[in-house]
Image 1 (cartoon, rainbow, N blue to C red):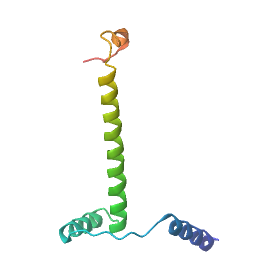
Image 2 (image 1 turned 90 degrees about the vertical axis):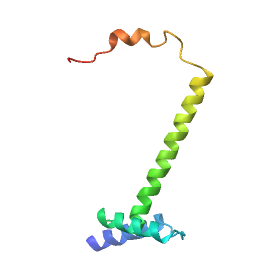
Image 3 (image 1 turned 135 degrees about the vertical axis):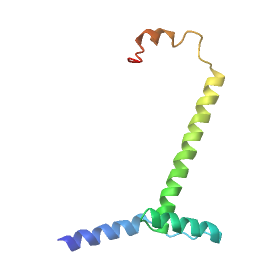
Image 4 (image 1 turned 30 degrees about the vertical axis):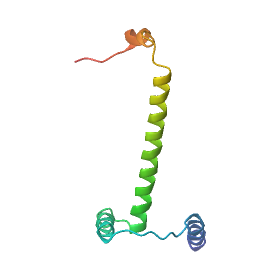
Length: 93
């Protein structure tokens, strides 16, 4: 039973992954290898995580820029949020 699960998982992983070739300078590869060892992962695993974080950061920056442009186009009205001031609770100091 466990061997079947193991085979299915490895087949699924194989289908979900694609091998890509990248050109990196030697110093960067050395830094990646050092970081991967510290994190107990592989070079590929470290790189996948770093790329996912970079994509999330890019998406966040794009969303922030979209919000910035929206507020520049339609600024907050002077008393738009003042109705909520009495609802705020800052707790005991």
